[in-house]
Image 1 (spheres, rainbow, N blue to C red):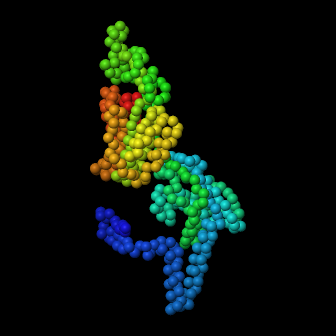
Image 2 (image 1 turned 90 degrees about the vertical axis):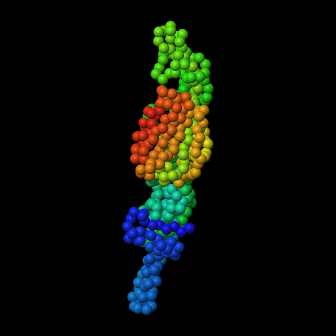
Image 3 (image 1 turned 30 degrees about the vertical axis):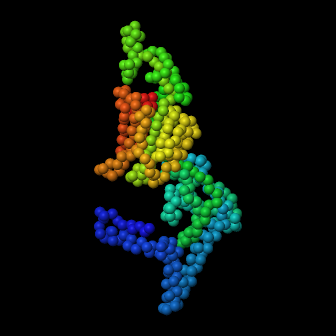
Length: 409
């Protein structure tokens, strides 16, 4: 299907006239001119016509241009075939905007120096990206003759995902840069880029002394066996007051019971893309921050990532699987059904809200707690992080708003 690229309506008619593609069907016939070699071929054809019909100087120009094209195409073609390249990261996973060392292994099989090798397509987010328009992941000025060597380079992935999306290629356009020869890299190891997980200040209070599974604990709660009594604290329910003990001590005393070691918490992450890749990436980073904080507090979590229902235990393997699942969300999002929370359990919903005035998206974190009261801030709390707010600072203060919510207590 042809696509017409036009300038926005608010631009002038001259700008739209100069930037509108009126004949998209003809693009395939002129795409060869995107490579400089196409212009050299066109100039050679014109030189031949000049030599035939006007002046012999055209033959000299045609011969020179032909020699330049031959050398400019032959050497890159040879360079990518006499070298064997492999690319692997030193670590299997890294967070966004974190540096990572890539090791490029090169074997030059001829007794001549090879110049201008580059690896393209490893960190491209989209398999449809034109390699000629993307920056190379690794580049080498030269490779010595008959050399077997490893080269380390620092790269910084900026977008989550599992890389490479498509098969990377070794490329060379030395010496003239008029044509680029490419060949798939033989040995490639994958790299997983996790979304940024911003630190949330403070630890969520746990119920139970032991970091274990469901069950009655020895720390204060609202159910379970009798543990003891203690003085009334702000936020305690009046129905837990032990009036007999209060009368004896002339102060309010509440009954302490064993609470569950961990709570049942549901987290929903909206994976729809309604406002572009950047808005979805911001939402995924907020989700990674919340889930990492819950994991740090060793809270077993059931996560609905779009239409996927996932369950993670508070161990190192659970955290890795959680981050891998967030990294697997497509760049352009995926359709999912609206989430209907189970009111029997506490839940955290991470969604987006479109701002009418700026047409940009805010991140909305909604906490629903069936046991919430005045101490917890109510049964439902909603925190909106604007599109221009610093996400790291907003996530750092997130639990200050809900630290007393019994969903995470």
